Length: 140
Image (cartoon, rainbow, N blue to C red; front, side, top):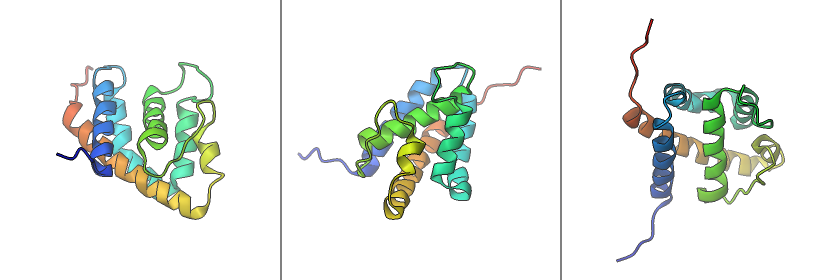
């Protein structure tokens, strides 16, 4: 029996792993779920590069400061890991280089392909976040 997997299976498997890790962290899971649900529209409205730069700023990605918003930092880490390890587009980004820096140096055709690939990955993240992260009752 063949063990060849489609890119959708690889995306799904990686997205499931990412969301399962987040679902364990009570401090970030609700905010992460909300961000993941908004992410595709942010990309479609503002573009992938601008959305990634926004997440870098909100998550304080360059500095290791804990003052950044953790959900942005986590989603950014998931997207960068997907692009460097799982994506069929082979988009390696050095660990110490910002993803926005790498995206700003590629061709328009490659940028479009990466945008489509990230949106497909985000769809899986959204499905798993919806399924695995339960809404918590707000305490007032």
